[in-house]
Length: 140
Image (tube, rainbow, N blue to C red):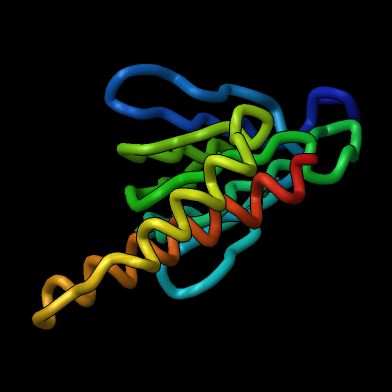
C-alpha cells in the first residue's frame, strides 16, 4: 500500500521535442477548451482537448501550484492515475519573461485582421498572449 508521500497521480507534459515535466502530483488543473478541469487520484478516465492556459500542479506535499506550465492547444489523457498532456507548445512559468509577454500581446493587439479566418486567428493569438501574461504575473 502506498504511503501519503507516494500516493497521488503522475503528471507528464510532452511536446514533440521533449518532456517538459514528469512529476508526482496531488492534483492537476487543466485548461480545456470548454473550461478548467481538476484531476486527482482515482479520477475517471477521459481524453480532452486543451485550450490556451496554465496546467497547475499541486504536489503530493500539498504545495499549491508548485508547477505551472503554459500550454497552447493539444490533448490530455487521464487514465490509471496518470495525466498525460500532449501539446505543440509548453512553457514553464518560471521561464516566462513578463515584459516580453506584454510586448507580444501589444503587438498582436495592434495587428489588423480582415476576414473571418484572420479575425479568428488574431483572437486565438490574443487569448494565448493574455494567458502567458497572466501566468508570468503569477510566477513573479
